[in-house]
Image (cartoon, rainbow, N blue to C red; front, side, top):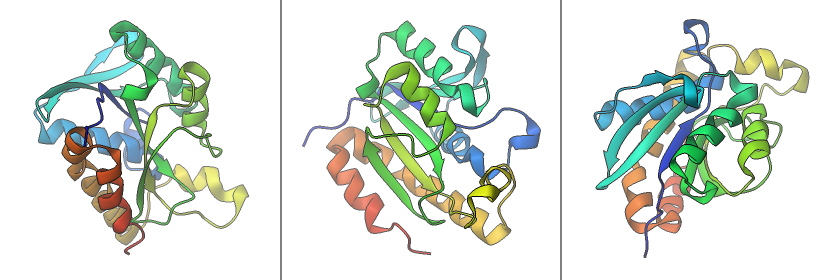
Amino acid sequence: MAGLPLRIIVGLGNPGPEHLVTRHNAGFWFVDLLARRHGGEFRDYRKFSGETARIILSEREIVLLKPTTYMNRSGLAVRQLSEFYKIAPEDILVAHDELDLPVGSVRLKQGGGHGGHNGLRDTIAHIGETFWRIRLGIGHPGNKAEVIDYVLTRAPRAEEDLILETVSTAADCMPLLLEQGAERAMTRLHSRAGKT
């Protein structure tokens, strides 16, 4: 089974220390972990409107990206980087927090809409829908009016630990995704979804 030829992995989040530990930054946590595990070091590149790091994963060079444009304008950074390296949306993976999944769940999918996620909405506006997504479950506050405060605050310790565990599990699956493909990676990730 052929692996997925990913070239760019994007983590969605908001820059600045005040956002570092908020639920909305789960995507940043994911690419930060990949960088730590695989010897990457993030540097700020204005021409890409974000911080980038290079890693070798499954004998392949991958560029990690953290947009510094704030969540609602994430797509600009993704487009600038993908155009510079001439990389198709199908070879891009975007990691993001997901309100519609319970804490401790993670899902891999390709394409689809934005589901109300402003970072995805802007990314789709810039490069279309066909990129891959790692959806990191953060749960829902239960009331739509509370969503903004919910995603921009820190989760209680027990929930945060579960989200970090999910991030780690997703990072563990990246070699499988690159070497054996999406179906194998989905089977492994989805079999643990919601085990909280």
